[in-house]
Length: 252
Ligand code: 13P
Image (cartoon, rainbow, N blue to C red; front, side, top):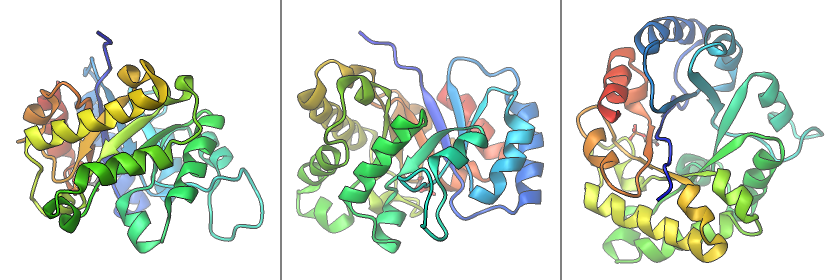
């Protein structure tokens, strides 16, 4: 049985100015100094990355971005490249969050290119997948999510697949206060792992799978007790230092 290291990742989305990020980082450092046994990550807006690098680079807290372009440079106005992220000490990047799929029209083809580009540049991609409410109610959630995984990870080698992180985020649970039950979340995370096993065999056992969607200090332990859930991708509950620290304590 493979021992996967748990990961708690905050996704700040479009929140926190530079000064707010600096203040958070200073207080968070004090709270997390003696935490062991799991990886902690903050995925912040691009503008906060320099200050997080300054405050956190020497700590146990990893820094990540929420998006990037798949090319390393070029005429792509308004975009940020993997090389730029690397210089800011980013070791992770969220790819294909449902908010990017919905509001910025990112499709599976673009998302697959971004996953590949992250890996090629030594950044760990956190691929987000998840169904909306009508797919869930129609009983099509699992087929849909399996399809996303197949398309977004197509063409990767087993070694690459073992390094990625997949986050299962049911859209109906994001920011709504409605969490998937631990059993439903486990069922889908197991389906994701079996999809990757079909593509890459035992590499699927090494790949970490997170749950996201109204995860908080009060429900993280039950979610992470499930055999195929290796951590959480945390939105709202990662914005408050006390709550995020409590969530990490409970996740251990
Ligand atoms: P909430 O934790 O606010 O529901 O957001 C989840 C999410 O989208 C993390 O990427």
